[in-house]
Length: 406
Image (cartoon, rainbow, N blue to C red; front, side, top):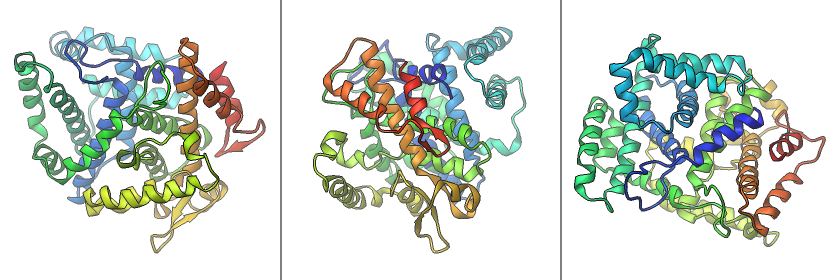
């Protein structure tokens, strides 16, 4: 993890989507990536429930690599890229090489860059796709297509039918190969999974720091995805040998860490801490509302997992043999509980990345010249939150945060 890579990933908040159509709200690449992974989780859980193997770790890294590729190629529309791949394969290969070269110097993790290269090669058709990945790729591609379709459905409210006719026909044709997936069927036919998605999509409409102007503006859902990516990258740095299940749990805990806000709305930190007892009271109210409005929309086969992800979300924890949440130290996570049977989660790492995202949101806007007392206090408060010599989850947080603001 380094400043240049973090700033490059943050560009996903500035890349506008559908900018040749009338848009009722900002549609940005980071939000699309976030919704795609929410959908991948929902569809993938249906497949797992039907006995299919889903490689969640592959999907997690695919979400990072796709965003990096999109950031580099944001000026080339997807249909143009598809035509390049079909009609000019050699040029398409060179284009992908160019993309990889954009990241070679800012991605010092050689293994990560190698995985990125393999992923881009498979997407381009240069490398063979392993048979065991095909179910996971179907889920991921279905999530990609359906998240695009959801955007189109929202745009349809304010655009003439004639503007969207060809786009709709193309999307409907592209999603056909994935309609055998039960989760996608439930979404397309607007069953319970769709109602659950509607709740989560509300996070896409909620703006963070809504008491102050900011550039770029960020939604709660996009913020969650950025936190998930930072959790993935910082986790590699602090503990590259953590088990796969821990990597997966950390990512989805981060992706869903603000899930309660889909029904409670974002309560800004100064308000949450206005009194000593208010944080606990707010948390209790959130839990009650989530229990009434969100939990009934979750399928039984992923309900407990999502509740685990969003309960005590910023604590290092495991599940004991009875399925009860147990708080543990980071040292014990590494030495005693770093295996699938304990379902380990680095909640404190998620919290660091949550603060890291907030710091970047404030600092980047200030550097763009759009500032306010709220942003300055938020940035300075986050910078002073961690002590200079403090190491949390294997990370020198003070050093990392000050580096990003230099």
